[in-house]
Length: 87
Image (cartoon, rainbow, N blue to C red; front, top):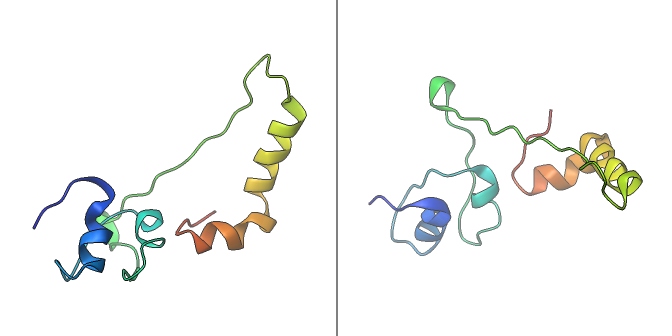
């Protein structure tokens, strides 16, 4: 069965499929679905997220602090718990 988007983990959790392929962050929060790991080698696909502070924002220091936090070691446990693999 082929399902579009993030629904693969939901289909597995309901027992309608034995295996689903989706982004780890879409599998982890679904009760009844278990993340087994990344796809091997050339089948793997990594999404890289970028962050920037908009020129003219009303809170540039807060935005910069958030970006620094997300890049730092304090955010790693929370990111990993949600299925992300920070560098």
